Length: 143
Image 1 (cartoon, rainbow, N blue to C red):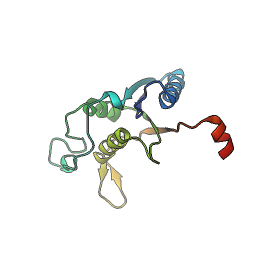
Image 2: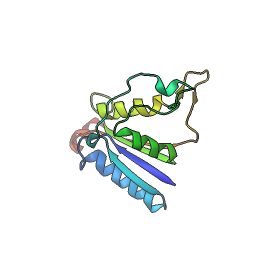
Image 3: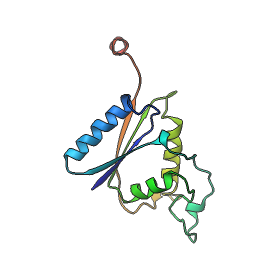
């Protein structure tokens, strides 16, 4: 079994990265293989809404057609058993890099059916890590 980790933080050694590494170490301790990608090291953009992944008779049905740094990662995720994504919270949401990644990842599998269906062949276990840079003393006041 294989788990892919996606770090959506621009800081590779701070809160999100530390939690991602700890979680992946725990996954490895259970005998699974892991691999970590840092989105800020990659060259890519968000979904172009070209609909190439939606055309049944095209060579890219169910797969993003854009040939950039995400292409090999999507191929790995397609065969993975689990996905761990982590992002700091920026303005109440994930980072822009994470948002662009998630758009590209999910749109290629999504079908416009009722009820909604997916083109992904097997279920994918998902883990989410969100972090915020908040001082512990301030956190204690809020809680």
